[in-house]
Amino acid sequence: MSQPVLGILTLYLNNRKRLEEAPVYERMIAEGRELGLDVFVFTPSDVNASQGLIHALQYNPSTHRWTRRWRPFPDMIYDRCRIQKSERFNQLIRFRSRYRHLLFLNRPLRNKWTVHQTLSQQKRFRPHLPETLLVQNMGDITRMLGKHGTVFLKPINGTGGRGILRISKTAPSGSYEVRGRDTHRNIITPRRITSATLGPYLSNWAIKRKYLVQEGIPLELPCGRVHDYRMLVQKNGNGEWAQTGCVGRVGATNSVTSNLHGGGKAAEMNKLLEDWIPDAEKRERARIDSAKLGVAVASYLEEQYGALCELALDLAIDKTGRILLLEVNPKPAREVFSQVGDQEAYRASLIRPLEYALWVYNQRKHSKNA
Image (cartoon, rainbow, N blue to C red; front, top):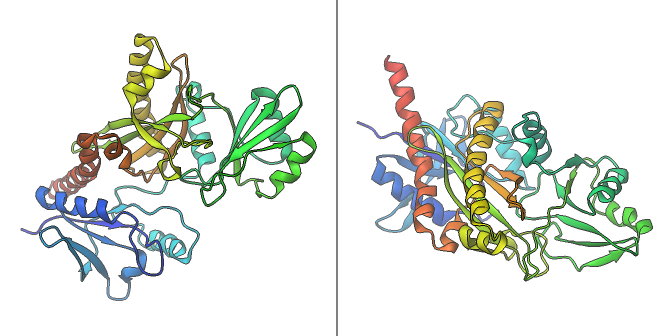
């Protein structure tokens, strides 16, 4: 009897066909073999549409070598493609459209603004959403600054902390302090800007309808570094949403974000919470409520946008224990768990999509035979 086949859809990082997450895929292919699941990796450029074949990348755990082989389309597709500014991403858009009839474990999520609007429709999520606007003009930013004192500007399609700015009023001078990262993740030099020059400065960032302005949440630790929490929720082998793990992240010096790719470090959630919230009961409540929130958000977004199998939620927890959802990431990395030493959660993060794929395959098989 042939094994079910899972194709991991990804994008090459460059024209030399470099894979971004090769070690992750190697581990998933090995784990899939143990589960009875045949796993290979491919990109849209590896597809021969006329022959209906894929020049698949296969990994042999015994020899630790990658090889290529022409394969039929898989039974299921696990989409790991992240946004790129390249022709490779345009190929992906065309692939998703042409082959939308195939069985995808996860469909693309919308941009940050659309996701925020979707979640805002539900009363249960509103207390967990920082005030957020799509920037139409400078007036949106100045009004938010007048209300909150500190705001974040975020690209609606940005990832990894790229292009994020934090603007804070500096009382009593009436000027503003601007910190952040450029589109290459580099930390920009902090600067003071007057109210008269803030608009001209931001015009260089082309923010109109491409950026969100979001209420700033005080997240600086006593050491001056910002922190937040990365929660991974995934479908399990029973087709149910569950929290795989949650890890704290502490940003690099002078960084306004905590992203690991921007120099941030992972930290154990419980230890970080102990340093942040003295009250043990509030800490425990925050852990329980954040897990419930993660599962509820994932379930609702899947209802709205179609098949999903995993999401990463970036959460802030303020001093009172209030949980705020900063961002939703549909293509989460796993290194936060390995960096903090939680090998159990790291392994689960790799295996759960495989177990879910097997569940999906068997459910479809049984429905066909019914």
